[in-house]
Amino acid sequence: MARPTAAMAVSDSPHAHFAAEVSRPDAEIDLIRAALLIAQEHHAGAEVASCREILEQLANRAAAAMPNGPDAQALCAFLAGQEDFRGNAADYYNPDNSYLDLVLRTRRGIPISLALVYLSVATDLGLEAAGVGFPGHFLVRVEASPGSAPELIDPFAGQVLSVADCRALLRAGTRGAVEFSERLLAPAGKREILRRMLGNLKMIYLQRQDFEESLSLCDLLLLLEPDSLQDLLDRALVLEKLECFGPAADELERLMTRAELAARPEAMASVARKIEQLRSRTGGPTLH
View 1 (cartoon, rainbow, N blue to C red):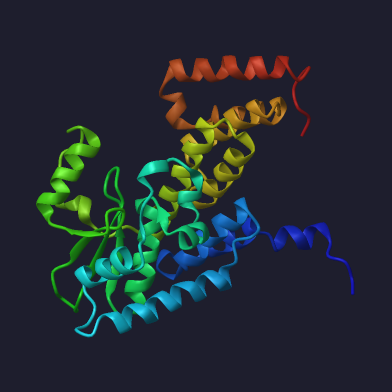
View 2 (cartoon, rainbow, N blue to C red):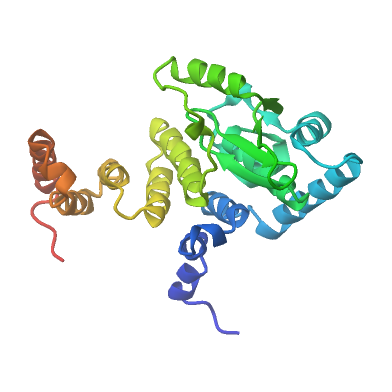
């Protein structure tokens, strides 16, 4: 049998599969598969097929546990009460809380990773379900029947929320900095969910000064939004921390043409100084 070439290996990497998945229209993205590919990019032991099987088994047990049919309350009673899926309040910023395969194993996570479990089980039960990108605390909304009023779930606490509860949650989470609007309870797109997951992880790894993981996450984020100024700036910062001074300077030079920076002379000057510093550490401009 022929040995796989480097090109074959790259094309079969989690990064390449994630790129292919998020190239689809938003409605066609397989959210669970994309989340598991993020986990695979971090650790090779994340197996898509086995995790899907776990989720299917959960849905089967949920159906048997709901003789009166599924709704938000029954879903919380099953996943939080019977199956013990809960928020990891004791170790909230552990990155393992964001990887779906590990969440399925430990039954602990953060709101958005636990939300994926709720969304998968709810969908398999025939509920209309969607994520809600609520500020500071991801939620799930489900409709027990077509046209019925959506019910809101806090997957971290495993409980159904009223709109008043959501107001209180926002006030506590943002210290009153964000004004409540029912628009905040609108369904989130799949790309939005993936961006939030990756953004959480990028923040954690940057704070831990784990720059190799941070670079990988910047690259995944840029597959979702190639022109994201913040992610491009973060990528240049990470390259500098990894002592890739020439590539970091190259990235920043490309950003100098962006209208957002051109409109901010102080920012342009700061970036220009950084490029000069980086070039001084490489011994001259990088050849292309």
